Image (cartoon, rainbow, N blue to C red; front, side, top):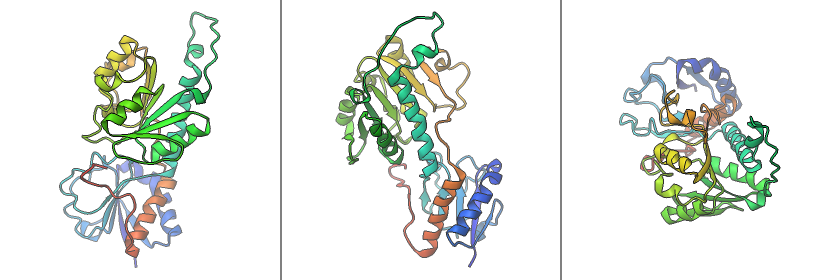
Length: 310
């Protein structure tokens, strides 16, 4: 039996994904007809990216699930025409690339690379950093990405703590949860990494009040979502010297407007949303496994909880 799969992502992604998806379907034993153009009443599954032209899911009454290509679902989760299951993407390739990017910037801050890379006055200022075990790194958001990052940082010897909205357990990581837990987690952090989803409950997780709980001279790394940080509050904390530096990969508006203060601020490193992206080969295997499950009558993986927004 043939399974009809609609590829509903931005048109320029079709050439990138067509071959990896077909290979993943074959590997999973799925006889699939994959196309970016298919009559709605023929579609069994929708592979989807929120920037696709498809925004009205009502005609797809036969479809069993929408399988998101992106880790974030904030742009589709509230779509009122979407009545069928929505699965988010947890891609091993993307997780690995995010981990590599974050660890790189943690080491940059930990070892103080910037003072030597940018040294126009040719200052000779020897400085030996503490050992990793003497510096606490706090991860806000302990999902698949946060857990992976925590494992790599622990492997390097860092003292790692984490915070999530609900209680969790991760081996070797001191975890906090809830509003009071956030204060405690931040108060101990030399470096903070934001890997939370973008929901109404996580917006402005770092604001004037919570930034004040960080020790003076703390560093911030945000490859998660732009709205997790109150931009004005961060700029004020940088200007006061309370926050030493922030590396930001995601923003409320992207591309970041040319006149945004982050570009010119000496305490901010702007990177153009490059920390991680979905990797076609590994993501295609995740998609294929969910379709295999759907056809076998097994529960889908990575289903979105609409009430929580992710």
